[in-house]
Structure formats: structure tokens, C-alpha cells
Image (tube, rainbow, N blue to C red; front, side, top):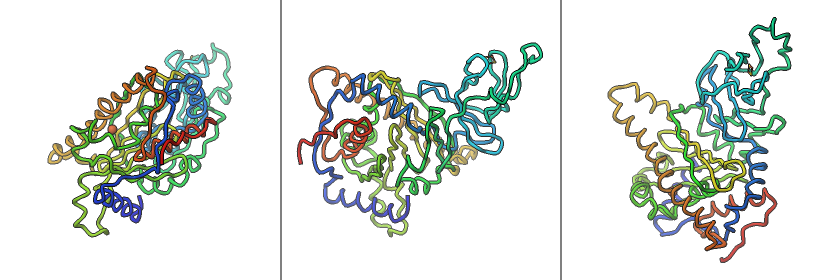
Length: 396
Ligand code: FES
Ligand SMILES: [Fe+2]
């Protein structure tokens, strides 16, 4: 985040704290509960937002060196991402061109070639078929047309984007819009992958996204966890076409009041949370980013999963090697894992109860308050993308 913007965000948060105000959407809206339960909407979303849309699958640090790979099975088809010897990023359907077996089953790692477990046809990091065992018995295979099926793939600003359809169009700058320069400014390519976890809940995927859309709930749901280090119901909020950024207010912001603005660092005062359409939350902290990718279970509106990836700043990672800093390193790691546990045990647990409520017939609408503008923004974005009318305004 550029310095000028850091100062604007910090000043805005201090202003809210001092005046007892919060970001204001200018009115309330209501969202039909069918948005979370309707199978037709779920099928349209799967097609439009997932199969038919570019996907952020990780950060550059997930493929740390030439020969690295990762696999992804969250989009209803097996995907293999690689970094070739020249450092270039590729993505393929992870499907053997002999008889369709999944070529690579490990979630991530490093390999010289990808050898199919069935008959050992082998593929390079560029997707080329490089060897066919016993070809003199099998018969000749034209290797030039038996490579893995390539998917559109682009590594930009330290992020790995893939389109899950071979004939899909991928334009990262178009996906990021006006947010691109700010994301570039974080130098996301520097961060080192440090573990991941998966959460599955019986709830619609948008209910998971909703939990990141306001801090109105911090003083109740997180009263014994996040509220100890964050001021609830206090945030800055900015939209960038289909994407947005929330800045959550850390209690540590008060230590900046006596410092000159030139020394202010937004990460000491706030937790920037970027939402990237359709399913990404990218959370920046001093230790490094946490990436949350939320996926429906194909067209089932009642189940979803979240893939959480942790990354560390190289200086933090260095602490791990140094015996003197071991304890501090473990504290930082525990804090990141603790934050992810809060998502699972508090946010998602509450949201899954909301999914039950949505199915109960008790209410027809969820209400989004003036202090929850992110919920207004991305639900309207979803609805617009599906050709649905905007959320109904119910008060000013
Ligand atoms: S199915 Fe892959 S080598 Fe036969
Ligand atoms: Fe929360």
C-alpha cells in the first residue's frame, strides 16, 4: 500500500475511534436467503464465477523454485501447476493423455518429470510428453500432440492465476482493475509458503465470504479472541470495481498517535483484507499474508470448503533457523494458526448456523447494515454478474 494511502487509512480509523463512528454504506439492504440455498443460483455461480472465470490459486511462493509444482482439485477438474527450469509458470489439466489417469497426486513438491502412475508416460514441466515406455511394443506415439492440456496461466504481482477452461480468457490486470498497483506494491512474490489448512462446513460458500465482510461481530463472536487485539465495529472500506479492501482497526493503532506520520506503517495499525472477486480473501499482516480461497462444492449450495494458505516474510522465516529467535518464530506461527482457528471455530461455525437458519423458513431475508458496506458491495456484484436485480434498499 502506498505511503499516502497508508496515512489516509490510519487517519480514517483514528477519526472513527475518536468520534465513535464507522464506515457507512448510507442505508440498509436486504438479501433474500434463497441466495444461499437456491440450486439454480448455485449452478449459475459455478459456471460463471468458477469454471468460467480466472482463479487465483496461490502466491508465487507456492512454486518456490524451478521444478516446483502444486495440484488443485477445487474446481471440479484436476489441475497441475508447474514452474519450469526457466522459472516460467504453467498450468495444465492433470490428466494423462494415454488413458486419462491423474498424473500427479501429491499436493505440492518438486520433480524432474511427472510420470503417470499407470504406465509411466512422462511429462515435462512444460506439459510435453517426453517418454513412452516400450514404444516399440506399444506402437508409435506422436509426442507433439500428446502433451498435457494447457490452461491459461499467468503469474503477475506475485500471484498465480489460472483459468480452469482451456479455451478461457485470462487477463490479470482486468481481474484486478484499479487494485493492481496497490497489490503490486506489496511485493507478494517475496513471501515464503509456510503451510496450509482446509476447512469444510455445511454452508453456502457466500456465507463463508460474508464472515470477512464486517467487524460489527468482533465484540460478540470474537470477544475472547480477536477483540483483544482489534477494535470491533471500526474499519475503513474502499472498492475497486468488483474487488475491495477493508482495513480492520488494531488496538495497536493507539501507539501511532505519538509518532510522526512519516513513520506510520499501516501494518502496525490495521489489518488490510483484500477481497478479489469471486472467492478470495487476501489478508496482509506484518508476518506475511494469509490467503483464503472459498469454493462451493460444485453446484451444491449447502456445502463449501476454504483453503487457507500461510506465507511468511523472508526475515520472519530466517528466525526459524536462528536458535535465539526460535521462540519468537513459534509465537508468530502460533498467532497465524490461531487466527485461522478463529475463522474455523468462530466465524465459520456461526455462518454454518446461519445456513441452517436460511433453510428453516423462519426468515426470507438477511439484513445488511449501514456499517457492513462490503456485504452490500459483493452481493450486488454477484447479483449483477448473474443478471439479478440489486439488493433491495430498506432504509436510509
Ligand atoms: S494412463 Fe497414464 S501412462 Fe497410461
Ligand atoms: Fe470474524
